[in-house]
Length: 244
Length: 248
Image (cartoon, rainbow over all chains, first blue to last red; front, side):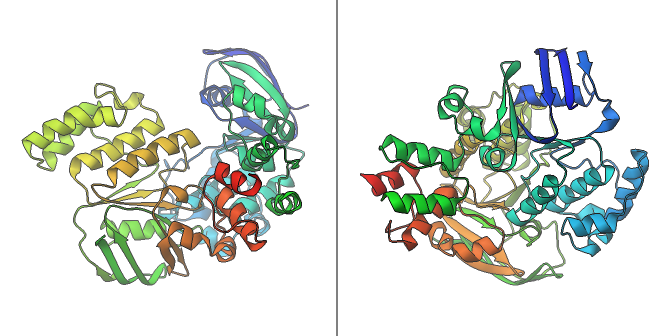
């Protein structure tokens, strides 16, 4: 059983029925979906049913909440484990698995860069090991190397419900299995990401961003060129080569 | 175009070493590099937030920075915030009135609006508008685009294109997604400037940039790789134009 919301209502959202299943889900980022996340996190009074308690859900917000200043990353994480009443996981193993250097835990907390703060949030989230993980625009401060490290780790968590809140269509297309879109305060669709992100007419109708490779292929097809849609640019180049 | 900002042999702890960089007036510049390459540290040096550095920086007056997501405001509404800045920077009375009357319209902001009711995008626009009020000469924008959608980025970059007539603008970013809006691109690696040139000239170093964890914007990447197969003759920045080049 996934994360199930039944007839959830909180102004302006009305009667939302959604199930987020295990795997990597995208939730198209707009004001309605942010409201939905607030409801799931019980930050917002709502009517209806949510099957999982908030203790089973962890939200990695866009920016790190620095209300608590700590001397080092390790001290912050230890404090956070106590705060969330969680068992201290083997941090060293976790950061090794994430491909982060060991001395990261000893870094001074108050001078972390935006990307380092993001990594602290990920370490905490992965260590807490909740059933549901909501990631709000998770890659905005990261370069591609760090982005790939995080995606590689998320791919191992397929038994968890991961919800990525983003409007980056390239990331949704490349990294997620299912996409949920709220529109005008209702559930618009819940479709396989690949199928949705290749449905250009639908994306245009609801003003959703089109992935670059999909848009390029569509423009070629308008010229009667029989290109296939490729996620990998190298495959796209081979296909273009065949058709020029 | 004259260099408005000149940095020579800049050294700061083990973050920056022997960094040389020139920024031309009236240009939009992107500074990029992998995470923790020293972009934000450089901005903090230029705004005197970090003082214990060695090296030469020409004139640190009239440099301002906006460090996203920290967007601090003093007053409740936009108009009071503008008045505060204009008075504090002793802007000439005529210019003051002109800016109070014209700038909110240019930035699509209602001067009577409460700042607490603004969304992120509006707060960013307000921060930049206040810099225009101050007559800033070099504006540093740290991570300013990370949280905007493509429509908002396009609108903001059009505003910055108009603003560059009055100043030099430097935008830091951990990716190259929006660098095609800029005139110059500077890449920091190994504590110093690795590449510093017009955007398209820097993007030609695609394999080196990829190694740093920087992917080129899709259409530039595609056209550059097609160029290796002799399918295009130059790096392209517009998708429609590339499609026409290939199949018309």
